[in-house]
Length: 442
Image 1: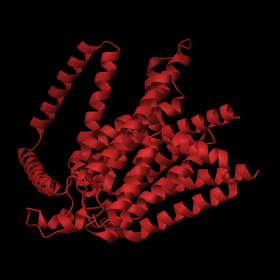
Image 2 (image 1 turned 135 degrees about the vertical axis):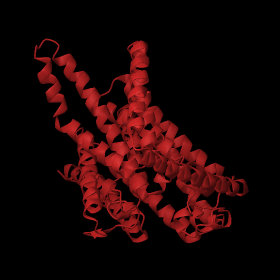
Image 3 (image 1 turned 90 degrees about the vertical axis):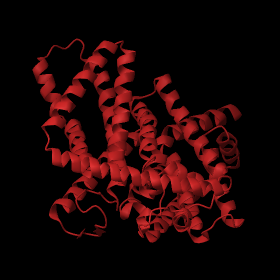
Image 4 (image 1 turned 90 degrees about the horizontal axis):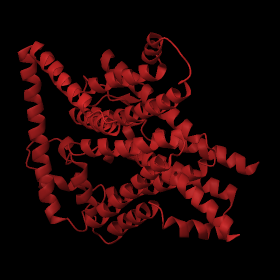
C-alpha cells in the first residue's frame, strides 16, 4: 500500500515538475528556477524516505548506471561543480545557479524512474504535453490579440505582435511547439498504421474515412498548433520543422520505394510556392526578405563574436551561466541591449560555458540516449514507447537546427522537457536492467 502511494506521488510529481518550471517566463527567472529545484529535491527525498533504500538494490543501481546515458549527465554535473570550486567560472553566482538547476534535473530524472513503475505513465506524459502546449497556445494568442501587456501573472516583454505562451521569447515558445507537433505527428502515424492493420477486413466509404481524419481531435489540435507556430514568426523553428518533415517524407518514400512520387510531389510543391510568392504584394515580400536578411546578418555576427570567445576558453570554458556577463567584451554589435548578451547559437554557447570537457559529456549523453531510442524502434516495443523514440530522434534534429540561430536550450522550461523526452525510454530500459539484475543476483 505504501509502495503504491509513493508511486502515485512520483507520477504526479514527475508530471507537475516537468511542466511547472515553464509557467513563469519559461523558468528563466532566478526565484522560479530555485523554487523548482527545491521542490525536486524535497519530493525525491520524501520518495526515498517512503520506499527505503536496500543495500543490494543501491549497489545494483550504481553498477547498472555505468551502462546507461545517465552516467554522462552525472559526470557533467560534477564537472560544472568543479568549474565553480576551482575558479574556472567567471561568474560564480550564475554558475552555482546553473549547477542547482542541473541537480534539480537529476532529481527529476530519479523521480521519473520511480514513476515509471506504471505502464500508463507514458500515456499521461503524452496527454499532459499536448494539454500544456494547447493551454500555452491559447494563452499566447489571447495576450497577443487582446493587445494587453499582462494577463494573470505573465507580463509581455518581447514580440508584442507574436504569441509567446508562458515564455518571454516567441522563438523559445516556437521550439516548444515544434517538439509537441512532432510528438503528435508520430502518434498519429503510428496509430494510423495500427488502425489500418486492424481495419483491413472492414469496408467503409473512403469519403467518410477522410472526413473522420480531418475532423479528428488530434488533427484539429495539430492544425491549431501549426497556426500558432506560424504566428510566432520564428524562422528558425519553422526551418527546423521543415527539415524534420523533409527527412520524414524522404525516409518514408525510400522505405516504400516511392522515389518517383517524391520527386513529383517536390516539383509540384515548388510550383505552388512559386505561384503563391508571385501573387503576393512585392512591397510586403521585400519588407519580409529585408527583415530576414537583417536578422541573419545579426545572428552571424553574434556567432562570430562567440567563436572569438570560444578560442580563448575552448578547453575549460567560462562556467555555466557565465556567458551572459562575459560576452560584452567580445560582442561586435553596438546594440547596448542585454538581449544580445547571448550567442544565439546554443552549440557554441554551451562549448564556451562548459569547455571541451563539458560539451563532450553532454554530447555523449545525447548520443547514448538517442541510441536507446533507436533500439526501441528496432526492437518493435509498444506503440507509445515508439512515439517517444521517434520524437526524441527527430526532436533532437529540430532542436539542433534551431539552436544554430537561437538559444532555446538555455531556457530551463524547454531544456527540462527536452531531457525528459530523450531520456524516458532510457529510464524504462534501466528499470528492466535492474529488475533482471536483482532476479539474477537472487
